[in-house]
Length: 252
Image (tube, rainbow, N blue to C red; front, side, top):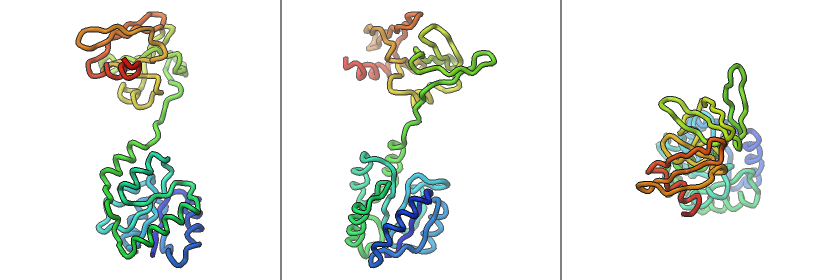
């Protein structure tokens, strides 16, 4: 089988090339590419039987590359994603190699590729589903501290010192346990994605630090009043669409 290797990590390419060299009767590496755009050009030109394909790459990721091909080769994803991705890849009837690639695991891939001969296309490949999988598996960039301006200074706030975030019109304010207020450069939606798990969104305009919740009180229409342990003993109202966040948190 003629193979193309596509990966933006030189060490990963060298390791895979070395490992595949132990299977000269099965695989002939006819080309390598260091990003998705180069890989697309190479696959179109050489029309290999199999592509060993990284997922996260510059210019085009692996799924974007495949979506632009008129004819799909057999695909083996080489990925750093953990075991949660494994079942999804298997269900799509494609193979995968978790980095760093182990010789024993590659041997199983080679055996599977032998069985696929002479088929050129990958059965069951659903690029839309795999694209959604990629988004779900991307590591969250979690904030460990928050920088805010105070006059001419830039302060770094510990997450434990933050009581809650509140948006007012176009601005988002940070409220601390000691009662200070600072302007944040993040939107509420961005904070919801980046904050540690101790922060929970309770309304369209508010995210609270659950470590500083004193008590909850049932309110009208399935809402709650959330009282915090900060100096101001802040009392916040949950929104209808977000009350479930707190319910799940405290198993009400």
